[in-house]
Length: 285
Image (cartoon, rainbow, N blue to C red; front, top):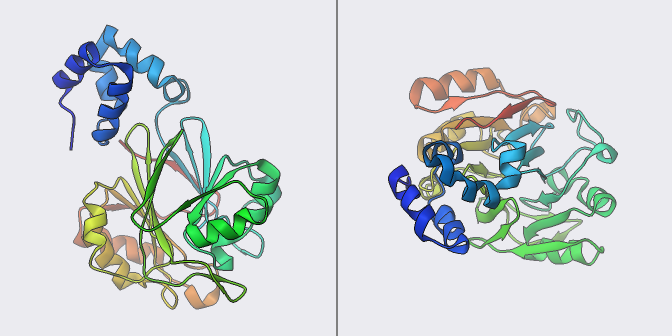
């Protein structure tokens, strides 16, 4: 859903600051820069409400750190997803180099939970995870926010919602709740989907209905979707940009990401970006 620019101008004049924030969040696809340009002098309301974004730039920067580990920078906040660095032969940084404000986890397997405890203990980052996993991490003294599938929470940088994924989740033999996919929407409206470890399922079409700017999808096969199913996932999700992950970390999940890119772009309207560990990109508006 897109906010018409003339409506945005009227709302700036008539709504309270609190109501305006609610209006923006209810229309998550509204580009901040477009609204700001049209509003002109009235943009002072946006400047005060979203000052951090204006100062830092409202683009979302993604950095790939190998396997399924991602660093997201938005609104002056650093969010890590599945920080598996120690023992990850493709990782470009070590755990003690990480700067994090939040860590979001898809599940508890060692190649996703990774260095969460060490990073969060050192940096004070809050950990967002499925309820059972969050309770476990809370027992280790970490600051946590527990969610369940279908539930979401607002944070200073935007909103996180957990969505279904087909996989398992355990740590050292203990059940840690379900695997989850992650929907992250920043305050400017950019929507990112991290699929976690998952097989293909038809309800990906429902996930895609929110309007995805970026989909981070596993293509490694064996424990997740392989390239063919990941292509079908793109057809269901219809993201603007797809980025493959969870491949080439170990020999048993070796894949040709460039071949997958060609197949996706031949069969869909989605662009594909193949990233190397340490590589960064800004999410296109």
